[in-house]
Length: 362
Image (tube, rainbow, N blue to C red):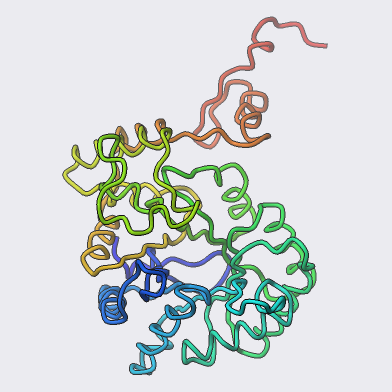
């Protein structure tokens, strides 16, 4: 597969590359990103390979990420309509302003206007709710976004990092009110973070939403730099900068080592293995890949050429199997209760042991 093997995003008419370029590292404002010059090289290389989907956010490098992207396309106006630019709102860039962020109408409108200014465009293709706002009514958020679609300032709507019940509420509310629909869902997903398999990914599949996993290398833990013998390698600038960027825990190393072993067996990088695993998971539409340097992007894109052999894929599935919240574990037994030992849709279920214990029925 290549970057120009485009896929349809959810129940929409929007087509995106199987890998979306994540640009959280565009700009050095947080101390560990890329210079504007290097960011531009990464962006140009992605587009040259046929990529068309770019993801940013108003809060990435304090808005610098959006500005770098905006400056690039302002100098290449003929390219703007050929790409899908997505950005996110929620993050407050103005200390002391209670309406500077969040998902309320006032906050959404001013955040979009500022994003459009930095991106130097008059519309955004995908506008994402970046985080969960537990106070603002979802009707207020959705109606505001619908107004912005009507005004031509955004094309499609996405949700990021919301609980599954809120995703379902939002998608259903938009549908019943006849507002612009929710098209896609962003969530963290990797061999080290699979708990979204419990509710979020099934919700997206049931609601017809595209799924864009972020952090498929789990902050670089699955890039090959880490192992149980090299817990914190040199050059990991983000590690320790916040609780989220803490070093790997003891439970992570069996998975990290397994990825490294599979990579050695196949003669590819650990990042290629980890990205290929995510890319080929059920429900996944386009995986977010980032790169601080051009060579990192090139290495990450190699994952599109790899389909993991069944034995290696099964080994990674097993070592990374998460314990999911109720009722996921209970529902694993549902086919056994439902189908009485038959093969249905390619899955064979055992006979419920209590049922198999006798032939008497009442």
